[in-house]
Image (cartoon, rainbow, N blue to C red; front, top):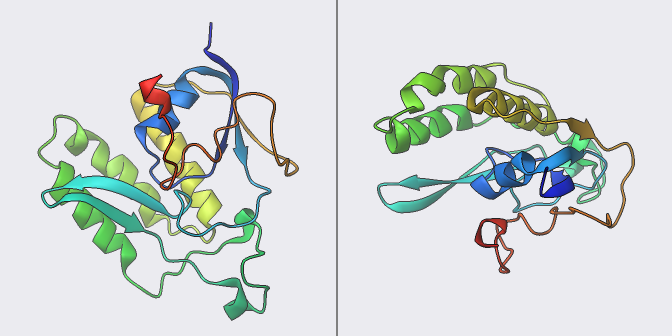
Length: 175
């Protein structure tokens, strides 16, 4: 029996363990695709353990004002990745430097890196493909559904605010 009937999550770039915990312990997973883009969140960044300690990797995005849109009001589904900077090379190198000596990374690296090499146009699509690839590599089955409207709050399993870099409350892993 799942711990949560459902988990409502934001899209996330190489999300933290807590995100996968919510997925593994839920009957159904709703990924929010109708929200407004929020900077400095797991939507565009991840944290890895490097030899210098915690390191943050961020995906550069094209800002809506540069495309004639309203700054800060763009739907997450419409956020475009900026390939004008070689971020893929930096991210691959950082991941290899941090995890190449771990037990399983060499076996998973090519599968994960192949998703980067597709050069998806939209951030949401890249994040979803990476999530699906990682879930597959972990052998974790999940009933993933994309939202079709934005809701401020869900009655159960709403982890959109809780699984964020700036959240200072108790982690799901600590409960």
